[in-house]
Length: 278
Image (cartoon, rainbow, N blue to C red):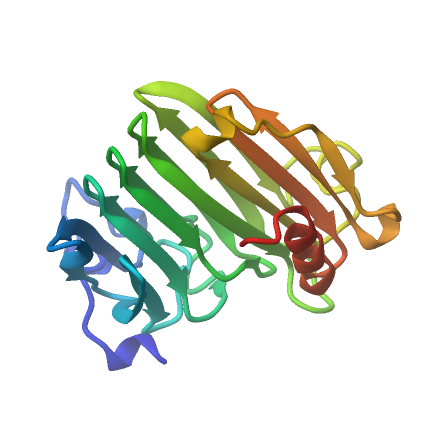
C-alpha cells in the first residue's frame, strides 16, 4: 500500500527549514513505533497494550493455549531510506507471547540515500516466554538499513527467536545492511553480535561471513530447562554448496543455531532440521 494512503507519525520533512535546520539537512522519512504488552490474567495471557502506527498494523491472532499471539501487518512500504521504525514488546510475569509478521520485510532505498533504522526492543519477565518469529528481512539493492534487536530476559524467562535475512532480490545484489543482536539475561550479557553486509562492508561475501550465499539465518533459544539437558555442538548439511547450519551451546543456558544457504528454501530446511520444534 502506498504511503500516501495512510496517516503516520510525523516525518522529518514536516519540520520547516530554518537557520538552525538547513534545508539540505532535512531527511524525509517516517517515524513510527509499535507497542505490545502481554500480561497474565485469569489463568491466561491478555494484551492490555496493542498499538501500532505508520507501517505497523497489529492484529490479534487466535491464541494457542495460554499463549497470546500477535501478527504484524505492513500497512505501507517500509523501511525506506530515512525511516525510523521501532517495535517494543514486553511479556510480563507469567505471560506467554508469540509475535510474527504477515509477510517479508523489504528494505528499499526510497526517496533518499540516507540510512533507515529498525529497532526492536524485547523484554521478558520471570516465568514468561516470548516467541519472536518474523518473516524474512530482504535487503534490496541500493537500500541502507541499520537494524538492532535488544532483548532483556529475567532469570526464569524463556525466549525463542528466529531470524532470516535475504541478501538481494532475484538477480540483484544486496543493499547496505547492518544487524546487531544484543541479549542480556538477569542484566548480564548473554550474546552480542553485529554483522554488516553489502557495499562498504569488508569481507561480507567471503568465507568468514556469507561465503557466497544469499540467505542467512539463526535461531536463538534461551530456556532454564537447558541446564538439565545441555546440547552438544553439531553441524547440519552435508554439502556446503546447498548450505550448512551449526548448533552452538551458549552459557546462559542457551543455544544458537546459525545457517547459510543459497536461498530461503534451503535455509528453512536447514533451520527446521537443526531445531524442528520451531
